Image (cartoon, rainbow, N blue to C red; front, top):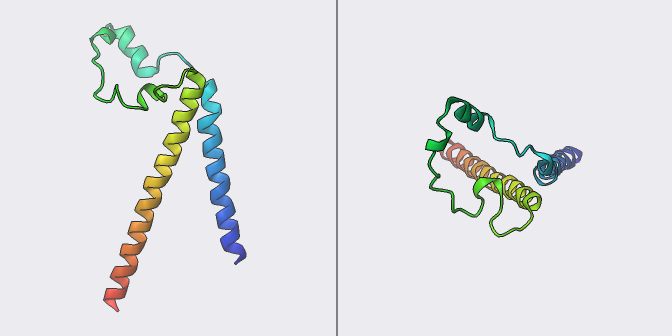
Length: 108
């Protein structure tokens, strides 16, 4: 029973660190262009870039649409990204675990 508690504590601590990094540390991320944008600007073809199909999505451009503060918007987008990733990965893990149990039961 102690092992289960330790594992749970480790997962909770990992989630807390991920949310802290995504929500708070991201406030201090550089506003400078990323490496690809910089290279495109240096090579002279940055102005030929077209907008992505996801430009109008609620989390476009590393921010949450409708939030006035750029820092808060970026932090919220990071937190949403961590939570969505956790939900998708957790759902896949549960699905695969269930599938593994079903195939093991069928083999018996």
